[in-house]
Length: 220
Length: 225
Ligand SMILES: Nc1ncnc2c1ncn2[C@@H]1O[C@H](COP(=O)(O)OP(=O)(O)OP(=O)(O)O)[C@@H](O)[C@H]1O
Ligand SMILES: Nc1ncnc2c1ncn2[C@@H]1O[C@H](COP(=O)(O)OP(=O)(O)O)[C@@H](O)[C@H]1O
Ligand SMILES: [Mg+2]
Ligand SMILES: [Mg+2]
Image (tube, rainbow over all chains, first blue to last red; front, top):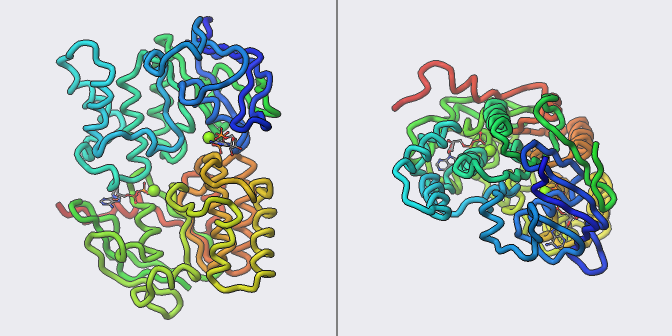
């Protein structure tokens, strides 16, 4: 298995005198499902943000595939990985669901594609959002806003997914739709990293579990 | 006692009724669960309880809400808060002060409590929730779960008779949820009314009564077009 991320001797802190991670060692597989657990405030979101290039200035080794993270541009990184932020409003860039997904499609377009509309519709249908395509996001429920971003992820199916608390705020039906999507991806060799406080996963769903503790990360 | 009488509500521009002619009563000591799929109206119902609907949100609203014998329509939102207050789903919308301690002291200061009592509430709540280490932290830099715990803490320092919790468990560690569960049990035992909209089985399991919005919405003659 090829790691998509490699951390070695890795340290990071928001404040000079206070390290959040110290000598962290971790390899994240590119084609399996990794679960990261940890107490509130242990550094899970920080790790996600580092892996998506939203936070920089670490110490030690930090590779995306074989490339040094500090040498990569935001664009390079965003062509390989996509992040679902825990703060769901932070994922939304447009005023309506429809517009939001169109922006995603345009952002990564290399060539114009005829089936954009169809892809978008399929993504919204999977999460039962057809009814709300043109509604302003400030009139949507929390779960509905989250579903916009879950639909956007489907337009990024070839990237590695980093999902910060993807299941929270979803009802059981939506949870199983998302779980099935992640399983399907794995069968096609696309990996996912999940941060979650949930522990009741099917045993065949998660390949590796890690726990952030004492400035490092341990395999569970 | 908290009473809803013949409440009907739908948002402007939306055909579906969230509630139609819905009545409900909660007594001191009750823990009530609000259940339902995503978009079923859990947050809407909590907004009706606390008066944000109809006072701030547009739509078709009918019916009455009473705290004891007081009609909620006669109270402004700031007048309602010391009796009944809501922890919102999104903590970023509810944190106003740069430092955690200020956030927690705000409500009891507003109630013009004695400084000794304010300190007692702030310190007591921090230790009850086991977040003493956050006291002097900047709210903006907290993790998501820490922000949620702080918004819950500021509800506890306000100490209203009726506590409304909108998906309080989202993003909270299992240890954190156990702490919240213990606190809610204690508050209910001391006569508070607690209304919980959530998906977490531990929290829903606390309730003696449940409002199941899926059931209500699948009932007869509800969706006018
Ligand atoms: N911009 C910042 N400046 C300073 N400290 C920060 C900043 N962002 C986060 N922190 C602190 O870093 C620690 C880790 O935060 P992070 O958001 O990564 O935690 P988390 O594991 O995702 O927690 P949660 O489960 O609550 O989401 C916390 O103690 C937090 O207060
Ligand atoms: N301000 C608003 N204007 C119009 N529709 C709204 C508004 N807020 C929520 N809705 C709609 O009302 C329904 C119920 O929302 P909400 O109560 O937030 O659901 P939930 O059960 O997920 O908390 C959803 O379909 C949502 O899109
Ligand atoms: Mg986090
Ligand atoms: Mg809600």
